[in-house]
Length: 364
Image (cartoon, rainbow, N blue to C red; front, top):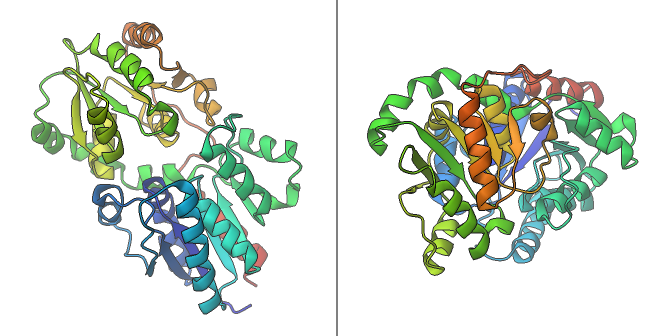
């Protein structure tokens, strides 16, 4: 292999972009060529192209323009397009995939079919809920990856318990925290502008909802009913994906005083989170970001693939029932200020450790 191999990184959804930004810079600082491939899985401008500018991440080298559609349709389209791309660019042996979205699985399958070396960033996360497409994606990708980069001991143990060879597993830390720490000063200094733009006049909660299992009228009625119990005293902000807005409108769901806003750029969104009273979310990444930012988090699901945040006391998994939401929010408010927590290897240097492993194993 040449001393300057072509590494392909495949991204397709907002969390992917956040995670690869520090990695792309680190590869290129080490004089390693990167072929950055955007599948186009997320079609909304604020969830996709805008974040490249926000993270100061260069434009992708290739864009697959995946059309909107079902997971199966998108998966098949992406596998075919990536198969063609890897055939035309056969010199690159290393393919990196991130997280648990459809793009992650498609890239891993296409790369494996072409005999590429696959490395999976964020390996070993498990919710134990196979009804979640993300859980199925994680498991399949981990088992066909040549290198599994795990964020914490919990993830390492999951991989070992599933029979994945220890030689394939590398504990490197949480790459999402690299981006957060790299941009912390910008996040901190952006709040006045964001507050003014949104007209915030009192303390507020930040809410995010995007999981398929929560796109249900009965569930959303429960969630919003619980949140509205606090809407007189606090402003409640929900940066909403277009799909969520469409569902709310189509099903005449009462959102009351909850402020539904467009999805925000990365820096603006985290400036809101940093200054919020608490966050309620069904996202995985936000459970980790709030841990580092010192903001209480309540997870609107029945389980989490990030139990380390629960063990640290920065997050509670509360489900979606109205009364559970009300009781849990009251507990957080009564507890007062949360504190930032230091987590081993969540130190902003994960991308460096990833590249050290790749150079040791594949760049001689």
